[in-house]
Image (cartoon, rainbow, N blue to C red):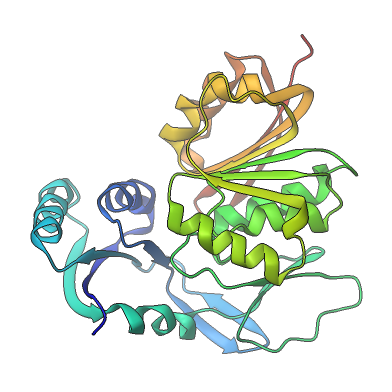
Length: 299
């Protein structure tokens, strides 16, 4: 019999999604999903997001002594968020892998890139670049604003042959996007080994595994390589803390694309990057979320 898990769901106001996601991600060894309120227009037509409604953040904890401790810790830490409603239900691991598929349709980013879930048949336009994706237990379906914002910026900033580092690669969607847009070799890292396994499978499905190197871990000073583009779609605090490492791994004149935080936190992230020799080039918004693109100043 498969391992029994608890699915912990936090119904969260949109403005608190970033903070609550970080708390739940740190507690969840079984993966995390963020489900925005949406209506499927059709399996081939995509979706419509219902703005202003609560977002469902789901964490998966094992039915064990560890799971009980983690669940109790979550309840305690989320007491600081009175707008969040927390619920739990038992779930078999074998059911988890397919239960969320009904929520995801085709994601047309409005540019050249289109994300097509692996279980959907879709006929793209002749000019579109198709990313076939099965997110599994990893972040990065393309339905979240931060992912779409990064992809939109990458469409204009990826140059032929440039090396790319994808920090917090999740499902590998941004790494795959870089290759399809004409980049050179891509390196992806993620703190979650489950996400790395998912990303490897997605690179193979998209026929780009030979151009993308993926490994578990975190970005630290002394990484040992430099890149023409660095993409980090994580969160405000983590991006700000990584400013010294970003300065080491981004080539002079190279591009740093950051997202995963709300527009109200853009000034904090910008200040952290400019202190380490980055110049703001571009800012994009979608709903409450923000993407910032920087240029590394010449040494």
